[in-house]
Image 1 (cartoon, rainbow, N blue to C red):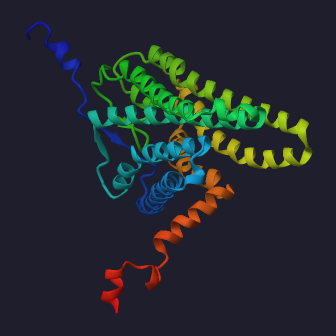
Image 2: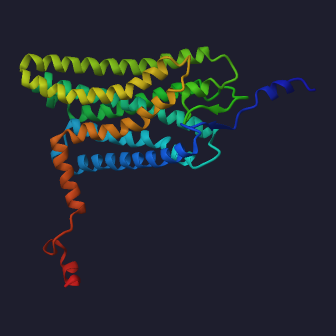
Image 3: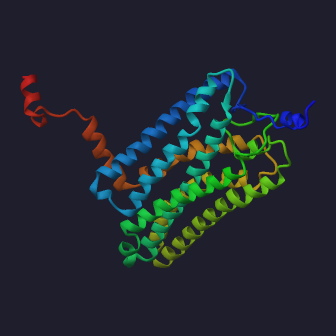
Length: 328
């Protein structure tokens, strides 16, 4: 045997990974396929409606709705990086993904989740300025500031995901290739590498864990400051603010809770991890439209106008002259 041939065999790179998905039961897989397909359609259509409403209605050209439109776009992206593949796998006997496809999923999940964290913090900051510093709101939350915040969200997401991939893409995968999840989740993939993953897990905590905890702490702190400020003004305003922020806090907990649980303690993986991953990849993108639009009077009025304009049949008098003549 030639020198170095053993090393060459031991460093064989895995070309694809096997995704175990959510369940091995055929009946449950059919149910999940229908259920998540319906959810995905609602996510895409609901968030597209928000983007269309915010961009087309002049009364909604304000900082909070500008940020909301960008949040809806990120939600569509976040729901699309793995959900179509998961739905297709429910109908497939062999649930595999190529090595490059797996790395692409890791790249996009951290790009979009990192960006969404910054946008959620930006929206909380907007509410803080509007309630605690109303006289300076127009100056502080200018169009330029909002644009910078959105650009910052994509920059943070990009830096965050590239820093994760920097120690993932070159890991030696020479044997196990079964990922117990419905997508390539970073903690589970790194555990398949043919080396001691302790240092990698420390890097995951230092990156994803700290980012999640920092953003979550900023959000909760801003909500507490808002509630304290409103409480000193009037009890009625306090009740209204608490009603609004309670829904926002619920979305924040459902989004950040699973992220913190999975990425702050990646040393041990639990079977519940893949269930928790559903919250920030599918359920949060569907909750954001509900929380931030259906509880908002201005958004409901604007959406009603959009739906009426595009779906309500036009009267003959409102039609173009050529169309009217053809009908007559």
